[in-house]
Image (tube, rainbow, N blue to C red):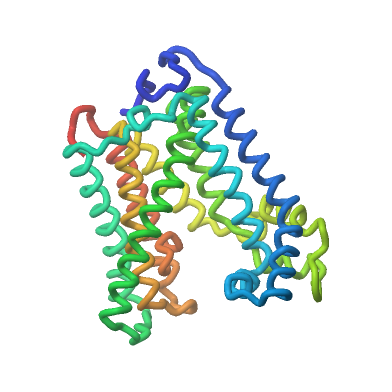
Length: 324
């Protein structure tokens, strides 16, 4: 059974103490990043348009190939990434040791083990899809494409696993852990994790006036609003619960192992498998069993939800001292 421990507390506090400081620091960076992206989206888009019209660069053409909401999303990450070291330092987490990251042999074995767990979990679900649902193989497999996809999927998995685990488990969960305890930390950080995976819906363009040339100066603020309330229009209970339980599982693994490398590895292994599966297979959207087995995102079916609940119970309620 998981319980509060000194080693996971921030600011050098003991398990009997508490502080809201970590939550305040995170909210300051998160809300500040949202405001920055809202204010900068239109000017940055104007600048890219100007460069493209005057110099016709391949980079600007590539950037303009994306909807403006992508600009908003990318711009928001700039202050988050730049501000993260400051927040981590304030929380006492600007240290690999305090995060539970080490490059010794035992941690390397742990990372490999959980990376393979992630691949095994997602591969099992995708195998069930291949057996029981209508899955289309695109037929474009080549050795060159396979190698490129493997390396691309590995890079995506490692980067996403590192960033999301550092923010959601390393910072947000431990800030709430320090403020209110173990179960509040797991539940609230996992709810936020699930919430942030519901992106700006395509339907926003029905409410935002189209622009023939330059976007209006306040379009970033409109995007910030729709990003905040996106879950209201795109909510789906099964994906939300699956993402929530995935977050709960990652929290339990972090608290059980005291190493951020374990949830990073599991997260990376799943993303790696998803990226490779999506490259070659597509499941029919009208398949009657899709609600059970999900799609290439893995979290859209009851099977993934059931497995995630079972795994969470194993890691959260197992006896202390038993190897995971």
